[in-house]
Length: 331
Image (cartoon, rainbow, N blue to C red; front, side, top):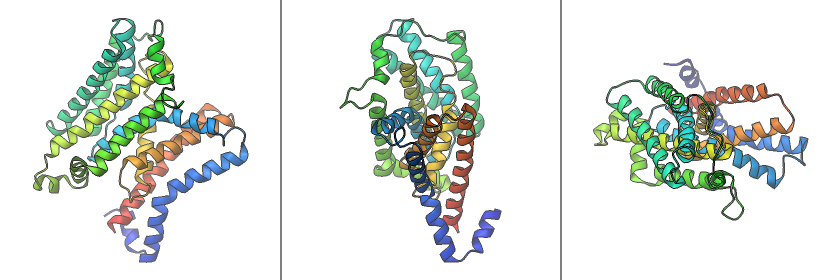
């Protein structure tokens, strides 16, 4: 029994209820407090529609990759390959278009299929070879990095990127809304419906909650876990494609930093509205908190290292709140 669980058993029901409410709403209150503080300190720069749109646009790719990661975590596993995979997919889609002269839709389709394939590989290693998901996905991610260097020889693909590909991420095709935001809303909407409103979603949550009980109930646990990895892989692939479009280039490490951001968003989300449960809406809120913090730090000219300090602190706080919520729910 953990020290936290032992401590919780000593709390009165009223205190447990109060702590439970705090754990569920602390992230939302923190987001609101951050917005109010930045708005007061810099009303002309932070609290504008243009800046809000910019925050969403900058956060959209992190939200997509974190949304996919949420599915892997909901089924009870971790996917550490997503940042490396997104970098690989970005350099592949750019290379297919620039060097191999493939039509943009064909290049995108191939790269998305490769994302699904990486998810299948992760799922196979974890479910059939019984390798811990942390080790399995870290190993796959390392192999992916090697493949990215092998394909590009470590040289960024910059010249010759067509304008049509750039507009995939930089354009505003729907009511003047940045395309990345539109894609993010569409992807997270699908993931939310899948998990919260379908029978497959019920199986996903059952497997994550108690794999043994789910197996006894007739659920194919290995298939559901693999599905979580496939969705995570495809979201990483989509993130890599959109990032390459935004940057106008493909590099071997362009998306590596998204790994920590995605995990911070997912764990922040698990402490939002629910008692330590991972869910898509919570991940959205978590990513928004991180993006708002980054935006505020940039507005005030904070040094680059402060973003790493902020994100690391957020991750620690997120895991702590998530653990508190689960512990209170169990007790």
